[in-house]
Image (cartoon, rainbow, N blue to C red):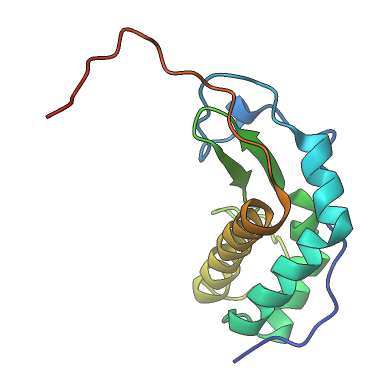
Length: 154
């Protein structure tokens, strides 16, 4: 299908929220989330590369994309380094469940549209993480497993 739209600006990560505030994120260990470095990678092309890849395959149409853009969802992403899992983690923005009661956006008129936008935001977040890990990040986790783990050699 594909979506032919301008790439929105990448999110700013320096002032991101505490990960404990997110219901969909669980990180153990080190709290050095390397957001400044990730933000630099996003600005240096990772965001554009990932967005273009995502846009080729997303199910969003231009009107749904415009709703997400007008709501500022693309600015609300949070990306962080999860040292324990040796990966980039993320929190994807979304439209809340009470969107109808709050009159969230004048062009939102169905749960189908809301769930489509929320799913697309999650998909974009994963594409960004994959792009960062594959093409930009060259560091490895500093997590060292405890020495008292059992030896499972066969």
